[in-house]
Image 1 (cartoon, rainbow, N blue to C red):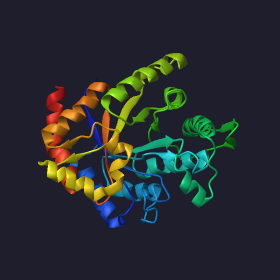
Image 2: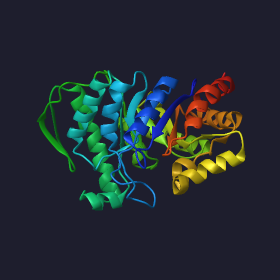
Image 3: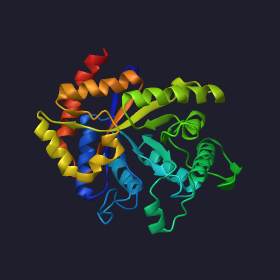
Image 4: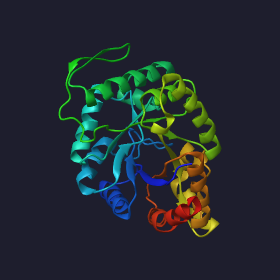
Length: 314
């Protein structure tokens, strides 16, 4: 069981404006959220792909000097979207701008439509996962080594240097995904954090598999923190919850909402469900929030739910 449950906020940069996203992020930082996240998609998620979408990496760079304490990351960067060495440069620069608050979230990418739209090759699952594995090796070397040379089947760098290095001695790499045979093996080999989906029971089962992979590669599983995405809605009435679900429309069918233990309702109800994640071994719940941003939940999750969670875990 995690000793303490951290809280993050993932503010989707779609269907919103920069002032709205900026203000919600700065407020989250001031309230004491442990992390603020964006996403790495080029078109909107859901049926209306023409909704406006801000670039997540640009958003984080803009937020870095406007925030003070929250860690900043992408949930998650599609590894097909950029050359891994260039991505390492971007992450190291974000770490410099934010004075050491960057987290590099990585995933194998899944949205084939945006790849087709933007002319990005979209290989088979196994190819993308192999690229993710190689990219983790290249990025970690660039972060730490003076010179990196790597020749892989999917990416290569030659006498590559990365300066300035990240501020953090070890800039955390987060890997998102739940594939039990390949993705969790990549987590065991390379990740500092694993981002999961699902109920506490699902997370518990997959954590068992992750420990098996850790044993196979000689990794201490306690060195990998576990985060989970969950749609969170704090309201005093069931009608209030229904109104918020209706407000976000089809997005409520995404795994962040539908596959979680659905921490909706009063502060006591939400606290019980979040505490269940901590008991399963989750160290941070990241509240997923599409626009229009839910100011009531942003405020009450910190002021009312967090103290209740701490009391339940004491």
